[in-house]
Image 1 (cartoon, one colour):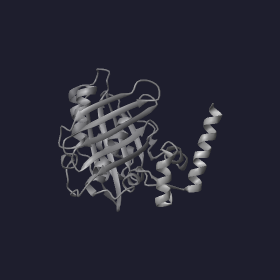
Image 2 (cartoon, rainbow, N blue to C red; image 1 turned 180 degrees about the vertical axis):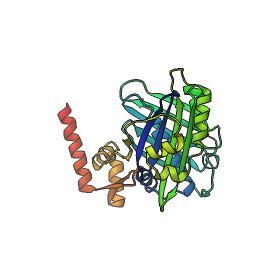
Image 3 (cartoon, rainbow, N blue to C red; image 1 turned 60 degrees about the vertical axis):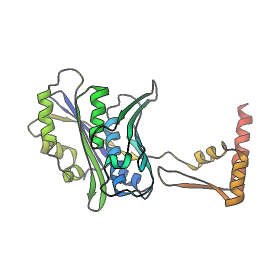
Image 4 (cartoon, one colour; image 1 turned 90 degrees about the vertical axis):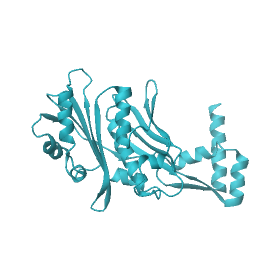
Length: 291
């Protein structure tokens, strides 16, 4: 079974490129950090697949963040991924969300923000309204308006053998001007036949052969996708010493400890009074060293 892997492929004779991503553990780590309602788990899976497919288009070192913001029960849903396919995500919501809630039921009036951050170079941000019935249509609209490249996505989430899975495919005209609309439509029709179980279980070469056995497809080396949070006890300690000391000691007097909780992975870092005192002592020493 294929899992937590991104594959890129190219149609040799048709000037169309494609991507296939299949996720289980990386997706499960994201949705297990909180008690997410079922519809929000699905939305996070769709965002995760979308972000992974988009990071595969990066030609540089950097990251892509896709976030949904709205005035509905879900105020924020965000996934971040980079060129090494390290991903993380989180969502914030209030109140009950029905299992069959749609994108618009959850987000209300909102918008999609795509932020591209190269390690070297200019940061880019694109904002589009939630025009479409679902996330797939919203992102296809983004490509049509901002990239002006014919792009189609197929995004699926669900369960296989009792485990949460998320998977997706993308095909896109190669931006060299040689791709034809007829070729693209032909490949769209073939890709439309893909089934959830195929996406969740088949290895890339088997799935692509099943869909496109009449075409010349070049499959590139797969790239692993992994959940990566980046939080640590050290970072939490560094954050504490940026807060007003009086406020921190008020919390210590009341609670006996200061805690920082990571929304991305669900880890809580706690510091008692001697540990907090040590943080401030070390921070002061570092400042003196720098001066």
